[in-house]
Amino acid sequence: MFEKLIARYCQMLSRLMAASLAVMVVLVFTNVVLRYALNSGIAVSEELSRWLFVWLTFMGGIVALHERAHLGTDILVSRLSVGGKKICLGLGHLLMLFVCWLLFKGALDQVKINWEASSAAMEVSMGIFYGCGLVFAVSGAVILLLDFWRLITGQMNSDELVGIRESEEQSHSDT
Image (cartoon, rainbow, N blue to C red; front, side, top):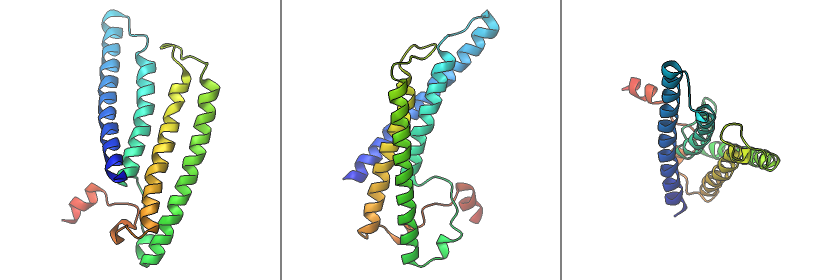
């Protein structure tokens, strides 16, 4: 049940990332054309593009965490027994949960500090800018807790115990 909900959430984030990227391309391209052709520009273009890029990065981090698509190395873990792999994965998840907590606390502090401050061009709360850290920390923690629960209850397959997957380039060159 939770897995399907998280999968839908990640699909929604993927669509938001695509829309954000499209808006960024249109804004930046239009601004460049306006600057060179008419010696003017869109005032909010640079700031909105920067905000969208930061939010896009954090949303991409959530999707990558769910799909286990982050970069990693398995030179040590792949040689361990199943029990060793479980211990390493569990420790890794606990450390990542701690990092999620640190990110949540830091982002929450930044949101509180900057809530009354407004951005230069868009004149909206800077707390929204720092809110992406809160969204990532909470979403990441939920994904990690679900995976950790699957690990400790024995619902995780042995091929899922190594927390990375091969790159597409390497898998294509092996064939």
